[in-house]
Image 1 (tube, rainbow, N blue to C red):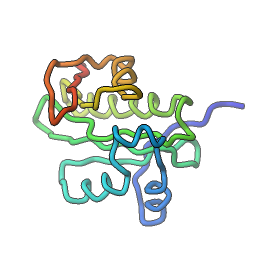
Image 2 (cartoon, one colour):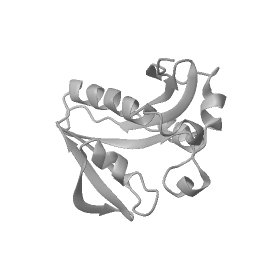
Image 3 (cartoon, rainbow, N blue to C red):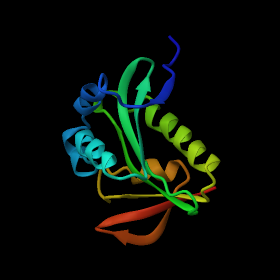
Length: 147
């Protein structure tokens, strides 16, 4: 069986409930906000770009970027893949699309931050090429991917 194609899709009134139902493991909840919170925040931040992550026709996650045209650094605000879909490469495939989008828009860097600790997404970001900056933001470690 071929792996499902990963796409980033707009969240609509018909899909929002399915995206809000997606959950990480109990242990991971300390590392990422609920999708409902992220979607609400996005609607009040004009520079937020957000999408549901789909594998085939199934929603499997959520991503949100703070886009700042004219600035060299943009920020990966949220990334989550639901617990039952982790380990299938969906997060990596989604991030490849996000990085491509950010690069095409002219940014020189994509920043993100993560809470350190066991089960933290830090290792995932490092495997994608992000490097820690040595900075902290609210107890989170800041990491940067240069293009």
